[in-house]
Image (cartoon, rainbow, N blue to C red; front, side):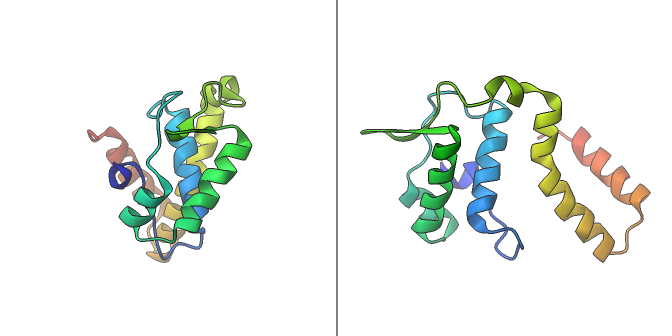
Length: 132
């Protein structure tokens, strides 16, 4: 379950815990993780992604402090029933803001590859239209 839920970019300038935090936020905002949904255990995620369990624990802890996740005895971490700012998260602008770090990385790579903006945008548009 953890492998299909999370993915990391090991060489990224963004710390692994931050990648996990951003992914959970996006999954909750996009409705892929519903209130009450259980997340995989710290150990499961750490094993699947081959990262230190403390890294996963840090990400989960930050999400708990933000009110995105709740710790439930006997179950582990679950999506909070009422995510702090849930009404605002539904707003398209807020969902778009969650995409920004990913697009910034893609833009940096496009510049490194010396792709012109029109080519990069055309590729992004094509990918958006493809079936998941």
